Amino acid sequence: MEKKLCWICGQKLGAYFAFPVWPTCVISRNISEPPSHLDCARFAVKACPFLAIPAKARRDKNLPPDIKAPAGIGLRRDCGITAIWICQEYQSSLLPNGLLFQLGEPIGVEWYYEGRPASREEVETSIESGLPSLLAIAKTDGPVALLALRQMLHIARGLLPAK
Image (cartoon, rainbow, N blue to C red; front, side):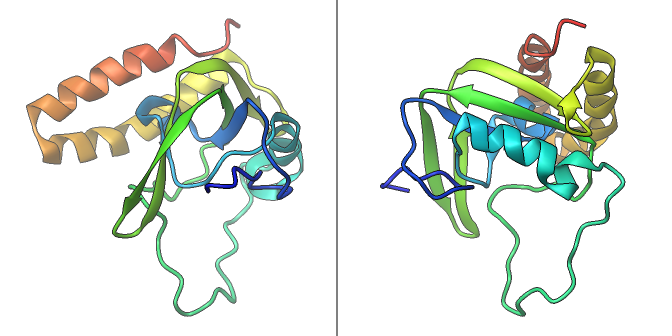
């Protein structure tokens, strides 16, 4: 990560970093995948079957036997919505199960559904469907975590598309 290379094309990144993320990542501001160029991220949300086709099954066949889960707490679901989080800085932390990226303050967030711009209603529906999983995790951590989740959700809702 020291070289700051695009996760998609492998070329050097510039001043801006684009992270294709799920709505739950917009709430938590964490992701287990490194940044990309904005154009590469836009290509990915339109061309990657898992990002562009919500009903597409995850391809788990023929994975290496020693594969491990990514860092953080991943929700194994296809929510149908992908956001591109655009920022000028981010942090990374090495956890026991891998590298986790903390997203910097956004200078923009683009929302996509099936490879096209997503509506506010589509994004809200996706957030509501993922919220029970986030609430379950926060409940195990106690009242402070629940309050923090409510605050993060409030902030994330300010980043949704206008229409």
